[in-house]
Image (cartoon, rainbow, N blue to C red; front, side, top):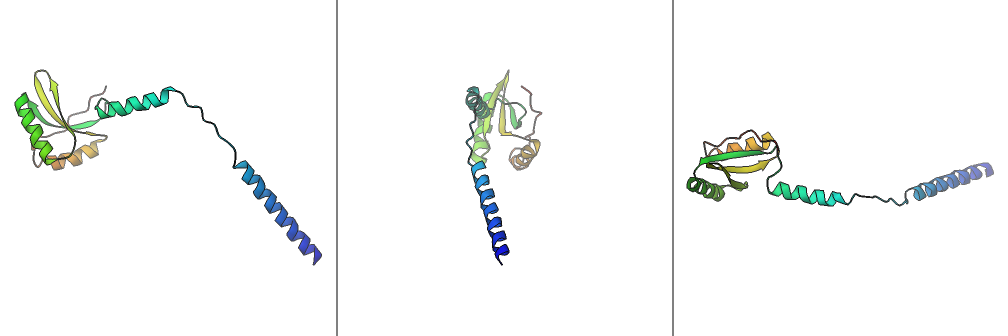
Length: 129
């Protein structure tokens, strides 16, 4: 009977000592040294994303022509849809672009909806910058 009690005490003592060692191992302090340029780079990337200056993005082209018609198409589009739109000037014409899609699938889904109101809309190949 005494041997059983001694075994139980030894098992309990080993369990508590293992638990104590594990708890000490998990309470270590970690120091991370980050380069000072990383926050600046992240800020620059978000700024470029907002201004659509990052390449390999898909856009839908609604119109190609003069400024007055481009403005009318832009107004008509913004009254019906919520994807971001912009007018881009490429000598000598204006283009109305829609969206800034990450992949072709997103652009195709939006194109199906937009084509109902603008049948001439299409997805040009993205430019690499």
